[in-house]
Length: 254
Length: 183
Image (tube, rainbow over all chains, first blue to last red; front, side, top):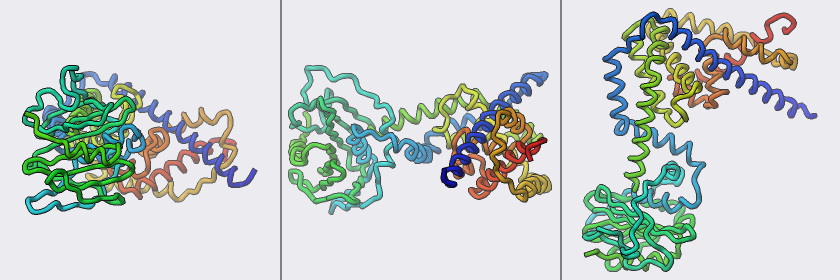
């Protein structure tokens, strides 16, 4: 046996020793805290002022700590990214992203947005809207009047999820093989969008008469364009010409 | 969709936080008070410890488990010790001296420490190990946190965490080997 493998084996033994020591320590802690708690003659008083502060911290958790925990969670869960969720990832990426759209021009921001950063979201259960009833159109969710939706969707695709939330309207189409197409519209007034164009093929594109951008990265095609009122994005792994066709079919639902 | 997803996740985290607080607030305060012997300082320590836990919420799988309970206590105890050190510099010197003494002693890892009695010996020795050392060993080898994560959890520098862990290992091994026939 080589000396390096012997040293390696010793190291593993040591680590086992330390792990066992850690386990014993944890058991000791539990025993001590139980013994200590039982030794108190009266139930322990928890300071009211502390209780008040702590409850405020918890109540403010979302606004104060969400960003930090998202970052940490993203690192820990990035490894769990599933290939089937790739389209959702990109959709979320586009949803979060900022497309700086002003009246004069589209300004493309090249960012270091990476999939790992949003990997966390793949582990979040998606709250599904109720199943679309059979009598609705294949491409338009119910109660979508006044909003936009594609008039054309490739054969085999149907609405699997839709959502209208905080001026962001999303439709997800999927087929039997798990392929997905994500369409999203959001008001330009509230929208800034950045597209990840690093290491990606990004080309300007016109969707009907509107300027936009087509980005291909890791087999996923994204199209972003804006009208006078709305910013639209489409993401999918399907053929880009099909995606362009879908984009060009987007129309106001009356 | 993003907002919905994040909202769902935020609510889950907030529920987790509430459950964590309700379940362990008395333990946290008791531990902090036992270290600090100061009602107000113990409150500050509990608050600080809770924020560390809050920032590490994903590391907590189950609220109701001994593993989680011990973890909460370890974090609270170490944060309380930090407060104690800050308040009383003379005590800080005392604690540092303990670490320095341990640092001066090099420990050779020998085959003879591994035998049938070993695990009984570990169990016995860890009980009497300097608590911050036992805590950091548990965090590193039982909870599997990295040195950097431990530093963040305990509110100490990365270097301090690394050194403390090294000394903790040395100290435990030395204690295991100290009894008759072992050194």
